Image (cartoon, rainbow, N blue to C red; front, side):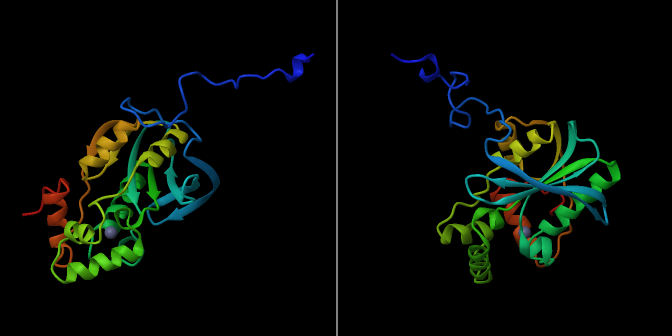
Length: 228
Ligand SMILES: [Zn+2]
């Protein structure tokens, strides 16, 4: 005799299958599927006062950041920025990451609202050690794409599904995306982020990064219209 209490019960889930399964349908971010919220605090910067919200990516343990200013529910000015320690922290002139990050924070400060999603995927996803090895190869004459391929990596391993989920968690429904990278626009759109417009990001061309920026324009499809 089985009591009603011990009868097996179906979990209260929809029968449409688990979230995050790969497929051809446009994905809708599910809050909490990929990342969990860890902590937040106010961080005043030279561009204004942001709330720094820290998320942990469950699959990798990577800690991603959203720098949030003002009311971002609905439509927001957004940059999705991948970590570049050399450029963001140390001001390396080998790339334009630092100026792009600060351009974005400055634009958000001028507007009074927006989000920088800062993803900890260093060196287009290959990690800092391999990025430094790639720099060595570039100093021997390879360009940034050839160097990554020489090391056995695709030109760009970055993924942006976590960014889509973080934006959804913040209530951002559609974005004015500050980027020169059309792939980033497409990828975020595939993950359920509505793109209102692409806002070009200007950064200064210098002798040390001219070749890098030219390669990004030619081989990675970036819109860098002001390059000669
Ligand atoms: Zn960089």
